[in-house]
Amino acid sequence: MGKYYKSRRSKNNDNGGMAFLIGLALIIGVYALSQYWKQIAVIVLVSSIFVILFFTFLSPKENEEAGDTNNYAPKKKHPYRINEVNNYSSTKTTKKNFLPKEEWKAQQKINAEKGQRYELHVANHFRNNGYEVIENGKIQGRRDGGIDILAKKDNLVLLIQCKHWSASTKFKITHAILKEFIGNATMYIQKNPVFKELEIKNIFITSENILDDSAKVFLKHNSNFVEHQIVQFNG
Image (cartoon, rainbow, N blue to C red):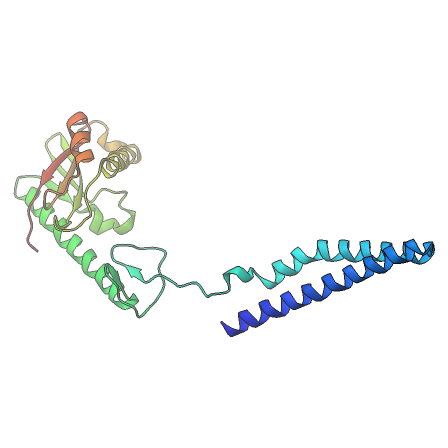
């Protein structure tokens, strides 16, 4: 803080001294002109104008190189926020809804493992109901294209996405999430034309009722494109 203040004060002193010299040169020029010292007056006035132009055009560059002195206080970095993947920095400060770096990573790992257990639970649910099941999320990982599970029975294929979110959290399934799932399912069928001759259903499965109002309205008006089911899980 002291370094920034000292730099700013020194800069202000330099500007004040320069203003004094320019003012003095102008006074001398006016006085010389009044005494018919035309040659001296012209030289002084031209010099003054040159000095003014010089510092007018160079000052912005100096400021740019020195940095914005109005923001001399170092900016604080935010700690890890729960359920956020990007834009984080390490900190030892723990606040409400925030975690330090290592705890954040550990929480993400726990959430991923819970999601994997839930996908297995849903896969077994459909196996027990006579479906042939492919655990696409387990096989493809992050390249699953938004389709966690494929379940087939006779001529029917279910494209399934699973969400194991607790109803006690602020995170809800919105209409935007459902739209994204429909888009992912459409792209998956286009990339896998073997399914085009079969009956396709898009099923969005959650462990609890975590739909917000926008999602409920969307499902009501788009039942031909996506269906919501609850498959409870305590794991």
